[in-house]
Image (cartoon, rainbow, N blue to C red; front, side):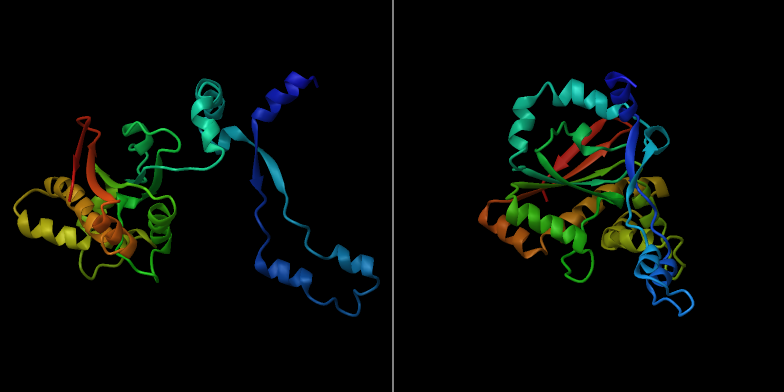
Length: 259
């Protein structure tokens, strides 16, 4: 195979980790051998589990856009060395962005953010839980690192139209069993916002209440951010600012506000 052909073939493959064997299999293979099976150290070593190694798999069934990186590399990365060279030394983003994991609302696209500009967290319904060292350490550690280590100047929480997480929150019935392992418990983060909407807009149709809750849940997350001591300190010192946002991909509008 020629060098060019080999390079082309390599682009169509990616690495994936081999699925580990079950714990029972690994434990059995590491157990002491029975008298009938013990013969030599070489035969014992052959019973040990082989180390996990990555194997090659085709890109196409794993990722829907196998040419996506090639396009990014030639049309963006290679053409903007002034952007990417400084990033090799480290990051210094000015913003932290909380956005929904919904595939329709990528914040880098909707906000026009370039690599290095925003430290980003995406989750169901773009929620920020209140400060708690026992639960939600993933979100808490991201906030702490952004504020204390990266020294971001602005934290933005952006909701969006037709959010499935918000619909799930508004649909929750007291005492009803959960349908998912994690989703319902997570969206209950916005429960105070839900009660506010149901109290103040009880006469509105469900879809209209959802549209209002999309913004009220953002306000709830902004209030929850203030429960983090380092966020509260940054606001008091004037080094940190909070902003709420809502992206309506139906109308193409973006609203921003300060709490």
